Length: 410
Image (cartoon, rainbow, N blue to C red; front, side, top):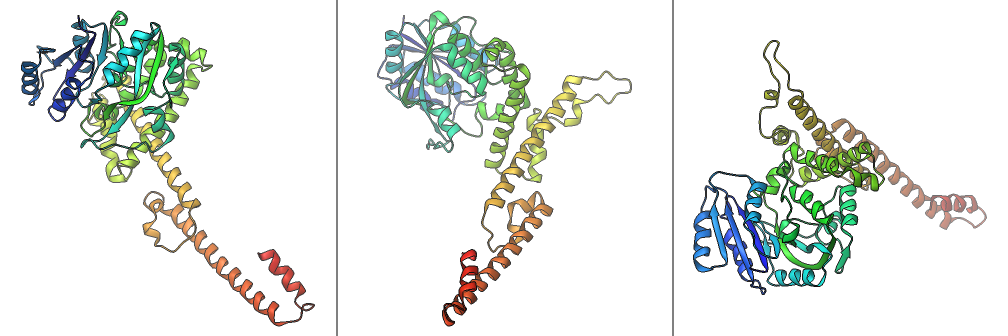
C-alpha cells in the first residue's frame, strides 16, 4: 500500500497535462500512486496518459465509459485509492518537488490534523507568476505568514462567514484516507471541494504550511474560470450556508444577514472580474448576461405558449442574473466616479474621461466643476501675486491690511 494516493481527474487537458504529471513524478517523496481518470477527453489527453503510464508503474489510468463530470470523476479516482493519505490534484496545476514529503510529515506528526494545505502561487497560461494585487489576493494565496494549526471548526466558521475560501483548492491539500466518507457532493457546481473540506474539518484540525508549494494555474479555458461565469456558481455559496447553517449561527449571522453579505461581496467580485477583463462597456454586456445564465437565449427561460405552465425557477434565474449584472455595473460606476472626484483637476478632453462613457451627464457636471475650480485657482494665484507686489512696494503701516489678507489666502 502506497503512502499517498494522488487523484487526477482529466478532461481535455492536453495543454498542461504532461507538465502536471512531470511535477508529480519529480516529488522527493516517491512512495505514491497516481490515479488518472480520463473522462472521455476529445483531445490528446489519452495518448499523454498512456505514454506516462507505460514509463512509470506508479501511474494507474483508465477511461470512464461515459463522461461523468468533474466531481463524479474525482469520486471515481478516490474510490480506487489505496494510500494512507489522499492528495487531490488538477490537470492545470503544478506541485513543487518537496510538497508530498512536507505534507506527509505534517500528517505523521499530528494525529489530530484532518486536512493540511500549503500556500500557493497563481500562474498564468504561460506559467508566469500572477502577483497578489490586493489584501484579498494575499488572504487567498497565503493567509498566514508561518506554519499554523487551527481548530477545524474555527477554519470552517471563518471561511463560511467571510464567504472567502482561504483554505485552498484540491491541488494544495491532503487528507487521511480514513476520512474519505462519501467523497464529493455532486450537487455542487463549483465549490464542491469547499463542502468536502468542511466535512473533513469537522473531523479534526486544519494545518497550514506557509511555504508556497503549489502553483495554481489561472487561464481563460480552465474549469474554474468557465464555471465562474455561470449564475449557478454563485448559488453554491448559498447552498453551502444552508448545509452548514448551524455554524452561521455560531458566527452570529442570521440567514438573511448572510445572504445580504454574500451578495455584496460577490457583486464586488463580479465587478472586479468584468473591469479587469474590460467587459463593463455596453457592447460586452449582452455576452456577460448570456454567460451568467448558461449561454442560452434569456427569453428561452419563459414559456410563451398560451395557458402554458410557467417555470418560476427559470424565470427567477434571468431576474437574478439581471440584478447581479446591474449591481456589478453600478459598483463599477461608483468606483470610477470616486476615482474621478478624487483626481486633481487637470487639463484634458471630456470624451477621454472614463466616467463619460457610462454617465455623460455626470461626467460633464464634474468636468464643469473642475473647470470652474481651475479658473478660481488661477484668480487666487493672480491675487496673491498682486498682493506680494503691493506689499513689497509700500510702507509697513500702509500694507498691514494687505499682509493680513495675504496671510488668510496662504
